[in-house]
Image (cartoon, rainbow, N blue to C red; front, side, top):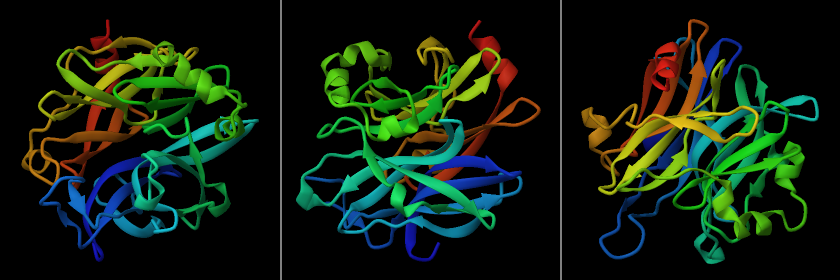
Length: 306
């Protein structure tokens, strides 16, 4: 891809019969840091958009969101989801927002609304917001509706996945005074997934997939050796709380391009779509260099929880 070196960690939206992929693209020219500090130098990433009729061969559609020195110096790990609020359906992109180094801000969650125009998506430039508790490193956000229509946010204040619930999308963007202070004061109450023994962190992956048994949450886990795997939990649509988790990963790094890359041994799920026949199509990043896709049978997956 001209101007980009690594393309990975893709969000997904199926719209009007077309698969739309929203991937993190790292601009050419970055290099490994030989000293202390960040892993790479001169590292900046944008959100790139691709589309495909069958989910295998994707065409590049352009840069959806471009980082800048006066705002986000990197847009990372976009997730795209449909969310109902006040009777209207919105297409919302969440991503990790990395500020310029002069601000000394930690990574946070960014949010933009998207609109389909002539078969591709565009960013609503006036809708950009940074959400979540101020001043706290926070990422891996997915947004979805609970059964009663409330808007739920899964996010990750290291090392667990937490749940925050709001009356509307507008309330998520501009919560009542003191909301996040109260959330942080009782953070343990809001935890819905913790790392398994021997692992260091978990994070929400794809927006939950609705099934008759409940929501399927595909998420990532980083083990003690730094290996990222794909895991799955069953979530209660009424509360957003986890009903059950499968004890073993659904997918682990195995192929050469999953094992070798800028960050080795990574599969990082970010997109999921249920096909009419019950097949669930997943998109994931591999070793911080490439994009992969996989499928799993919904019925078999649900049966594994029994």
